[in-house]
Structures are given as structure tokens and as C-alpha cells.
Length: 235
Image 1: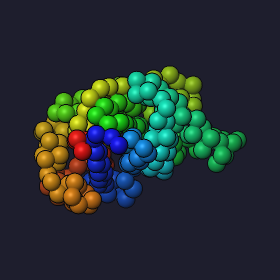
Image 2: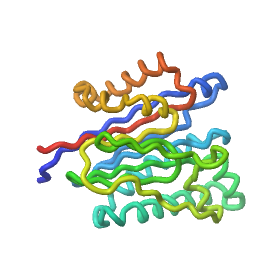
Image 3: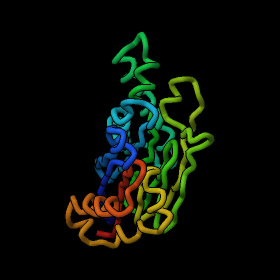
Image 4: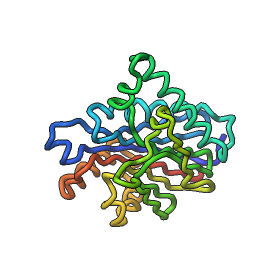
């Protein structure tokens, strides 16, 4: 039995601009666990495409479940293997919908960024492709969306572009948060530690969502805002 116990929570709200335009929340989040591994993923769909929430939601689930199953892969090697698995999955998905015009399917449904955290006992690896923010034990890494606000979507790999995996943390970790870019101001304000310190977040599965709802009511996030938390302690 592992000497560590991990808990995970996710929450998401629709940004005010998407509400104004009558569009869906285009983020995705999913948590999977298998054996000792806990995997959390957040994804952010391309806002200029009509249905990118489809890819973000399916992709976050696919990446989390596939990565949780890769228990034989050492943590240092896991980011590259996992993102290659996601790329293969996405290719099969879009070609399965319309093999004659897979590019159109990809652009309409399958462009999204990903951030993934894998916790195995007391160690974690955090990686992804695209923008957002990563929090590990009090240290925040804010990720650029690139030139002209054009993040590195995993789907660009299917268009022949070089989209390398970015590793943001590898080593011991007790508190990990993944955030889409809609939470940029909240992350910059230093609000994440308070969520980890709120005992109700870990006692009540819906409390994090309630906290984010309250924050959204006051902050009115312009973009969709999604986060996943992993908290690990000794058993």
C-alpha cells in the first residue's frame, strides 16, 4: 500500500464573453486514477472555432485515462509518451468522423491546449502543450499563449507542425493546480493557496465548484475558467 494519499477536484465556469455571445464553455477537465497513479487534465478549446469544446472535453478525458494506464512508463519519460498517445487518438478521431476532410473536422472540433499532472506517491510530473498556469507547492508558472495569442494546440501536430511537449515540473510535489488562461488574474492575485487550505474542498466534492461560482460572480472572468487540484499527503 502506498504511503501517500491523493485527492483531486475540478471546477469550471463559462466566461462572460461566451455567455454574451451565446457560446458554450469551451474548456474541459477530467481526473482518472489507476493503481498508485492520479492524473488530472485541463484543456482549453480554440475560441475562434465553433465547437472546440468537443475536443477539449473528449481530449481531457482521453489523456487522463490513457496516461493513468501508462504505469509502466517512468515519470521522466511519461510526458512524451502520453502526448504521442493523445496525438494518435486525435488523429483516429478526426479521420473516423470524415476521412475525406479530416482537416476541417480537426479545425472545427479538435483544437485545444492541454495541461496534465500525474501524481505517483510523493512525486509528480506536470506537462502539456499551450497556455494556462501551473501551481506546484506554492510556485506558479504562467504559460504564454505565444505570438498573436496563438497557443500550441496538440492538433497542430496533425497539420505537420512541430508541437513539442513542455515539462513544467518533475519531482516531489504535494499540491498541484492546473488552470486554463481564464483564471490568469486569479492566479496572479495569489488566490490558489486558499483553495488548498479550505478543508471543505476536500470534504465536499462540489465545494470547489461552489467556490469558483462565487469567485466568478464577483470577478466576472472574461474567458472560460477551469482548474484541477491534486493534494497529496502521507497516509
